[in-house]
Image (cartoon, rainbow over all chains, first blue to last red; front, side):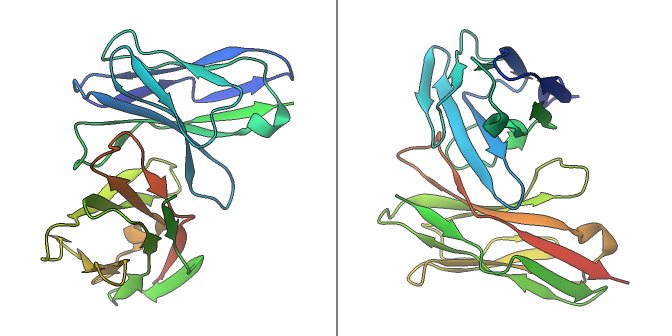
Length: 112
Length: 115
């Protein structure tokens, strides 16, 4: 099925560890984004990309890196995990400005 | 900076009744888009409806419709004939045409549907 695939669905990290959250879409969407969702709050933008080779920071970029080498993939790297990064992470893609997002199923990350 | 406010953290509705969820936003832009997303307990985010700011006509998708008041910067979602499957958290979101990679979300409204 076409859509946005996120892996893993669940992850537990120790403080200081690094990891990469994977995101892939097969809809040829130019725009891709990473959001985090904390309890009782909406989604906050971490990083986004408007095309292969182009990325930019969102509202809460500190502690995260991204790259966009292909249209399909947009991985999110946690450099040195901290308990404050415990959250649910969503990857999303969109065809253009006037289109809604297609979201992945999310990754629940716990940092202990 | 653009902000999106959902003033109702929780709402409830009787099955088959109608409920309206509120959303206001702050912007100095004239060309933008507004969205409502649904997040059921499964956690999957689903697009419900979208509205282009340049269109005066309110968007409608089956039982879901919006009341878009551009001057008041208000974008409410009306759910008619509510069903048990409508129970979810609903998020309002805003995006400009000039910065299409960024969307701003409200904090959400949790909707309970009573049988």
